[in-house]
Image 1 (cartoon, helix red, strand yellow):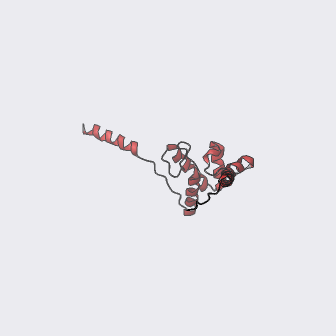
Image 2 (cartoon, one colour):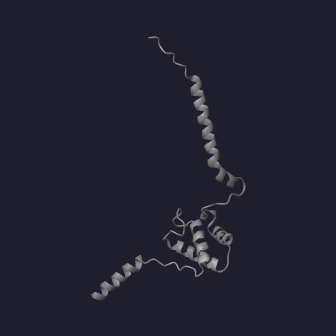
Length: 138
């Protein structure tokens, strides 16, 4: 009976065990890897970088980043590999290529300017419509 309890406890604890990320030996390479891991989106969690995600695919992605950096790949090569495999969605900072890229990065500022223009126009029209109030004689 004790063996059954020990086995059950072992299975439960194994289910909670998290695979440890093994850091690179070179501190500069590990710093690059950590920086890249903050730039890449977990494809399972979608709005979480792989550096913070506990999803199994994020663990694989972290390991792949470390292997590529250890093999001498540049940051652009690592980003390119993940983009080729998972699409531009995996990048937290998408490229600003072409008209679509400029609209993506410049669109919010254009909307802000457009909103300010409308606000100023409304304020001016309301100011022009208000009749001045004359004080009453006492």
